[in-house]
Image (cartoon, rainbow, N blue to C red; front, side, top):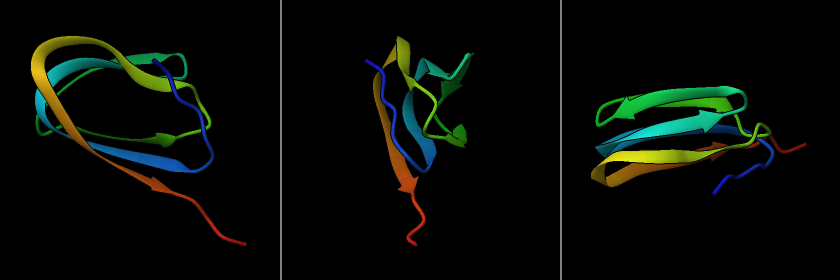
Length: 64
């Protein structure tokens, strides 16, 4: 499943190991890793290597 929306997205992985895709990039992340990227790019977990997976997701958007 992929997502796409305005703003910046910050992810902090609490447990598990996954392949996470944002835009044309796919990265391996595990507990303790974090990502920050523009949320207008298609993004989401591509594959779970080790579970269970939990993460904190924060979306920043600017108000005009």
